[in-house]
Amino acid sequence: MTQFGQYPEPVHVIAHVSDTHFLGGNRPLYGKIQSHENLLRAIELLEKSGTRPEAIVFTGDLADLGEPDAYRRLRAIVEPAAERMGSQVVWVMGNHDERFRFATELLDEETTEAAATEHPQDRVYDVNGLRIISFDSTVPGYHHGAMTDGQLAWLADILATRAPHGTLLALHHPPIPTPIDLMALIELQGQDRLADIIRGTDVRGILGGHLHYTTHSMFAGIPVSVAAATCYTMDLTVPQNGLSGVDGAQAFNFVHVYGDRIVHSVVPLAQFAEVTGFSGVFMDRIGEMTPERRLEVFSNKTAVLTDEERAALTADN
Ligand SMILES: [Fe+2]
Ligand SMILES: [Fe+2]
Image 1 (cartoon, rainbow, N blue to C red):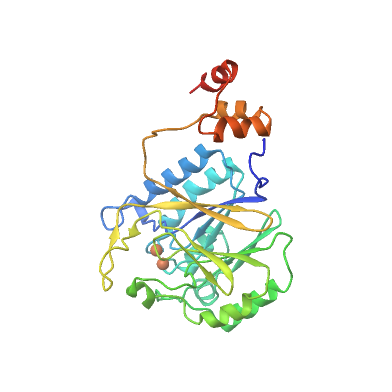
Image 2 (image 1 turned 120 degrees about the horizontal axis):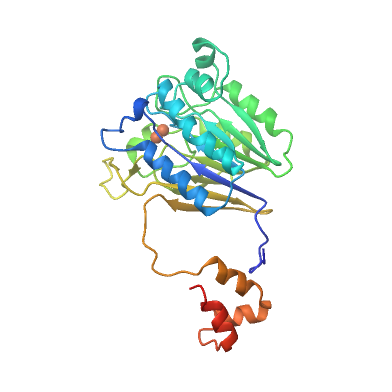
């Protein structure tokens, strides 16, 4: 493909999805939210884009009540789609998930409820040289987040060896402030200790969920990106002492990983009518021009096209 700008193709493309909150039997969440329909829409958009992400990272709250059937239904949607797109699936634990069901229903692991509940569900994935760490920030039986000494030691040990293309740390509770006081109550505790572990390592980005709205910040000098939920989102315009979940603004993020930076872009799930655009055919034809002519044709506000160019560029538009 012709390179139009100063940047080459990204080295990796990831899809970041969060907070699906599936219920067993496809029951609607709060009696209103069709979580599975929303996820199907996200998958439809991903496939329509032709992007073929190398990994789809789900940053927790996969099942609202941790029901086995909810995990099975989630897998039944995600895994065939991931197979079609050639994507790895990275599941991350959320406070609504149950460790035992997460391990057995999503990852086919053989374990006991006691063993799974006792051990944080932390895993490391290699995505063509990019390391993605699925880090379990949950506390069994609670909604706030925390990390054990053992987890932090494990993380430090993993990060002691640099990955070829660096590391993305994916955890449900993002280590950033929130303007929603009630969400602050169930934030990740002990963030200073996490900062001490990851500062100066090859962690290039932190992916989170939990907040149910898209937001970005920094933590220990590392960019943090939070994907909105696919189920329902938080209305940030309610008065500060309130919390309001709404059926709108659901989205996922594209994560384009370049050699020297990562770009996070929001993809809303809602359907919108196109009001302007250019087709792939147009792109192909403009790509055949010299860089100078291409800039002139597309950037010059008063560009004068030859008859031949006009015919070629408007044939399919
Ligand atoms: Fe959630
Ligand atoms: Fe959560």
